[in-house]
Amino acid sequence: MSTRFAGGAAALITLAAVLMSSVGTSAAQDGITVQDSSVNYVFGRQIEFTLTAASSAPITSAMLIFWARRGADGEICEPEFEPGYEIRAYCALDVAGLELTPFTLAGYSWELGDLSGRHLETEPVWFRYKDNRFVWELYERDSIRVHAAGVARETIEDVLAAAMVTAEELSRQLGVTEIGLLDIYLYENLFTLRSGLELPGGELMDAYSDPENGVIAISAEEGPGSDGWRRALPHEMAHIWLYRASSGAGIPLWLNEGYAMTLEPEPDPYMDAFVEEALGNGELLPFSSLCVGFPSGRDELYLAYAQSRSLVRYIRDRYGQEAIRSLLAAYAGGATCEGGVQSALGLSLDDLERGWRLHLQKVSGGASDRLQVVLWLVLLALTSLAMGYGFLYSGFRKRVRR
Image (tube, rainbow, N blue to C red):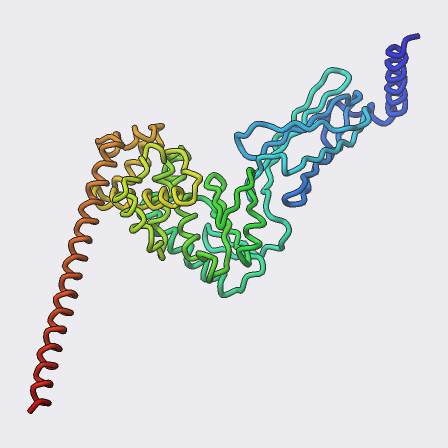
């Protein structure tokens, strides 16, 4: 007898034993049924899935499909289990190997098959992959919910009030009335926030938003080394409102980030000067390169954000707030980065950029002229002061000689 045949015979004997031992207790069942299914995880480390199922014929196959987010490709996990009329299956997935972002809605489904040829695919179960290292206190008002961990009650109330005001302003500007639930996760400090926002690819962030799921994560910390929640909250909320206003369509990154920065109550005071310097040095970035991504270099990344804010302000000042809505409507209809500008503003992206550059030159030139006038006035004042001092000194010497 060959080794291969002997192994096959052993497997048949094992399966036959399972059949004989279970037939009395399973004859009443009809088809495959799931008796229990659960998911547990250690945030940032591992997700565990367990399943108990039964059938009127021995279950011979089981497979778990996991989705890191809606629309993502499924991750397959094939558990080890003993075939039989009733099985218990277990799967564990390492978070490090998944494209899993914090606070997203992740999902899973089981596929089972039995010896009679029947198959069962369970309905997907979706769960919020939140940071369960902390106990979150819930505070809510209307459709806005703040989940706080280790944060003072007064700060939580301030965040909730600011979120209400920002929501009203965003809805007014963008014409969005139905936003759904907004979940804001408020960490105690920047360190705990960053430890929870270790995104796929090793990217570290000081604030985070998931527009599809209506989730924001920010830090309650304020002071040196932190922009503070007062700037981060309206910025991240803007991303969610823009997503809703464009019906979930992808909008150019320069519009997404540029508009979000115009909502910040304490804007970065150095950005305009940085753009003017790049203009003078011929180092401005073409906006056609800022449609889907920003540069990775520190200075170029900062310039990309600064230019985006400047362009969005130019569009709003030159064409009105309605132009922003028109852009979003065009992108909601499937327009490309350049096509959306053409549809909404009636000019190409290159023409828009040329108009923006001319505007910058006028503003920069005007500022330069004003600076020269101020310098001349200062110089004139110093000259007059020097001459006056000279006359006084000359008179003093004359009086001394007498």
